[in-house]
Length: 313
Image 1 (spheres, rainbow, N blue to C red):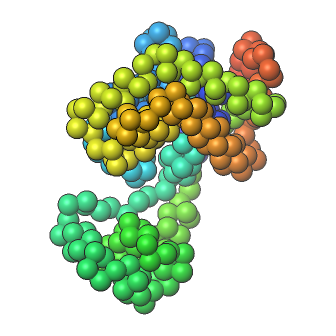
Image 2: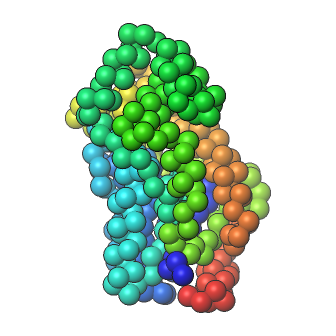
Image 3: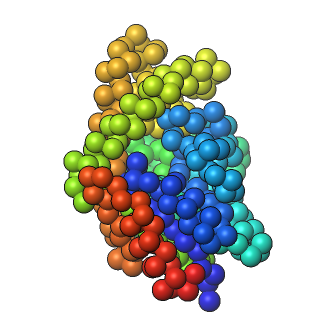
């Protein structure tokens, strides 16, 4: 049987870090982050990365594992996070996966494998050069001969995915569609007991998000973004596309209104939370825990522990 782990998901600002720490203290656990932006060093305020005080001495993994100049992929996350989870299990402790990046959570739990690739390989460079010279349609036409299933889903302007699909086929002799089907057929890597946090009323979620952004601004989010830019982190890097960083970077570099940018951050965060809710609702096996206007921490903790103990934790 796949080893059991606890998973805590939910939209931004829903209390995942708090619950993960409380359960870790109760069940001899360690926390593994599933947040695509908390992996980056020097990005603390805008990612709501837990402070040492918030961790309460509980070990946390998958924080600060990459520089913001790097592109960090889901494949790299799965490889590193699986090592963390397996290490926690080997120590006889309980892994608690907590975060709001649904693709990271699902990919880690499923045992999905990713086709290996080397970003600096000659093949990747050749395909990128051809895309620039010949255009996306020419490469898409080539892909359609080998992998019509993938080609049908792609637009000629989607150079990154076209190049990736061609790279997999040319390097392995196997289409990315076939690789994905084989990966989906694998048994789950872990037996997940999932707790999904949320809100009874979306207005309460919005208000909690707005207050969080206000706290981030008061804590120095604009200064954090300025420091990253001044250190040479490219504005177009993956890390700087994160909500909070993208909007503040635009204001700082273009002479915009920082407070207006903060209001945009609130809007983008609310929109992101809506997409997160939609993603996590697909998991019919999750135990859903909803906050009211005033969070009842004792009640949520009691219901969480009851659910876990009913399921063998």
